[in-house]
Image (cartoon, rainbow, N blue to C red; front, side, top):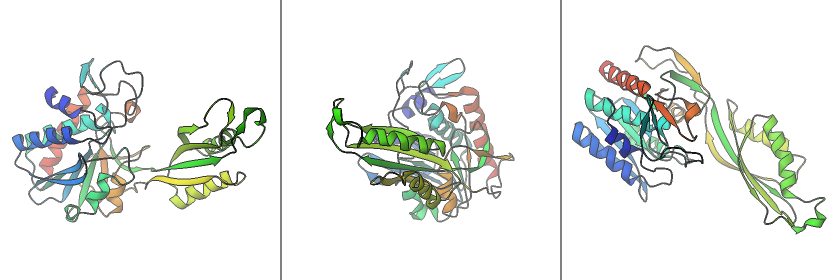
Amino acid sequence: MVEMSLFDDLMVDTSSGDYSHILSAIEGFLKANTSCELFTQNLGDKKANLIAVFGKPTLLVSCHMDTVKPCKGWSVPPYQATEKDGKFFGLGAADTKGNLLALLQAVAKAEPKNLMLLFNVDEESGPQTGMHAFLKSEFASSLKHALVCEPTTLKLVNQHTGYSSFWIEVPGKAKHSSEADQDNAITTASRILLGLEKKAFMIGKIEGGLSGNMVPDSCKFKCSIRSYLAQAQIVSLIKEILAPYPGVAITESFVGPSLVPNTTFPYLDLPCEEAEFWTEASLLSLAGIPSVVLGAGNIAQAHSADEFVEKSQLEAFEKMLIQLFGEFP
């Protein structure tokens, strides 16, 4: 049974850095329905991690609270849970507020022992995320295992690629558009973009130029890649593509390591699989906490208009979490 009033509270806008409303909703629900201890890690104006502690925890279940900004093309309100045809629509329904709802409902029903919950900020924006702050704290010191809630269509994931993003700025020379045969920053950038695309980079944002009758003196774009390559290898690959174009600047924006396969998660008798998207399980694993990823929803719906999660998957994930809390000592 999905608590629609709670779901609506969770669907509040968290794309712009204001977490005050969702923090209030989660804290209020946990205080009313569980006996956990609650702690906050203040990370700025209207921004904080919320940590719930049951007993003496060695297992962590984490779920980020933020979403990307809404794109164009929504036919339903993005900041509201809309039920239709066995699905719940809304920004973050799949990634990953539906799983946040299932987690809250599961702990209210199971009243787990020796468990820690982390509701963290800024997973989508990085690079210094709420997870980094958590891992630097004493809260992480006793943990032996972790489960990160993300849309895996209920498949247990123990391996995924890393994610690296970069800003690349291409110089040009401003002048009258009748002299556009050279020094055009956007034209040069377009050649670089084709080279990056051939090496599996994704181009997500581009900006440059002042007007249609002026040669642009700068073009800046953001690119990213999902790979098992080390960061130094990725940077070397970019520099190789940029070699014919002097003066181009590279700035690292985000570096997310890959998740190395581990077989030490002793709960939930499910086969482990590989995912094609990055998660904070890799940060936990790198910090010495063996981690897996699990949740309702499909990553194909994430970051898109009319994002949704299937009701049946949410209900199934809630049952899986209740089972996990029952298995854990």
